[in-house]
Image 1 (cartoon, one colour):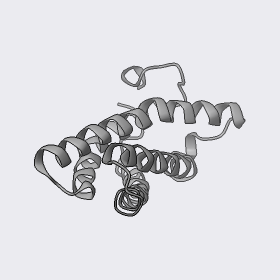
Image 2 (cartoon, rainbow, N blue to C red):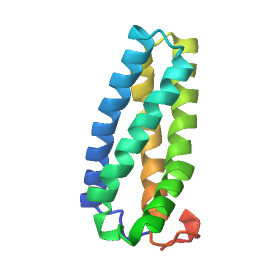
Image 3 (cartoon, one colour):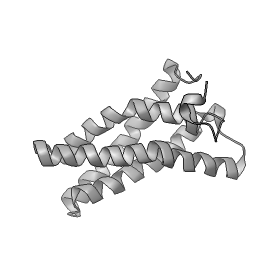
Image 4 (cartoon, rainbow, N blue to C red):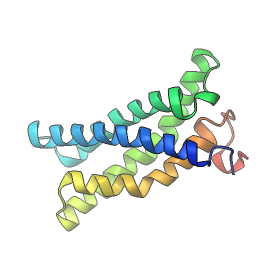
Length: 144
């Protein structure tokens, strides 16, 4: 396992995630109830807002000890964050949220809460083992 599985890093990850999730839920509610967007489209936008928020805070707080290296390294981490946790969050949130809304008739915010809970451990593993690992070309399972 990589060195970041400790409780302090997980707590920071969870704290950032809770803040990002607040942004995601607020955006989802605003986009579906106020702007009238379809659940899938609204979820995509809401998740992307949360992904960008979370990246900034993970850079500055959760993995600040692994940040740095200039603009090229920052952009590389942002690309990996989108390729890993961003895609998992986006695809997973849309799939789970839409399925729960359509099949179980849950409100979008409740369904989205379930999706985030399901995906959080996988996102931590990707962020810790690949995005902020200091090994940009190494898959998450190879980082120790």
